Image (cartoon, rainbow, N blue to C red):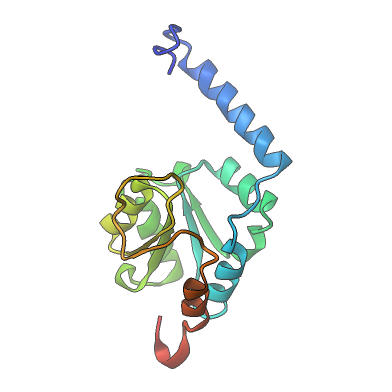
Length: 164
């Protein structure tokens, strides 16, 4: 970005400014996506859950706290805590290992091509609600909102008869 703005060598300064601006916005408010809280709580009632975020730990904690979801996840993993962030599989493999869940038995909820590629590379099933219109994201399930009744019904049925 520094080169694009004609400020070669100012990359660290621009990155620090962007981080400060994002931090300020997250401290102010970061509402959860519609349906996210209900979906997470329904899943958590039956199966282990975690966050695998491409954000640095500081921003991940601020976002979860601001959205009221910090207490929903017993485990969370940030991009600055793994060797290679998304689209590499490291975040998802780390989360699955911590939860004691085989990746082939896990589902990732993603909103971007980078995240979907990471989940797929790790061997997870991929549910996608795109954050931006357009684009063809790799998925096993595609929705328009985390509040879709079909999705919440699926989550409430987890754990019944040994299903995951």
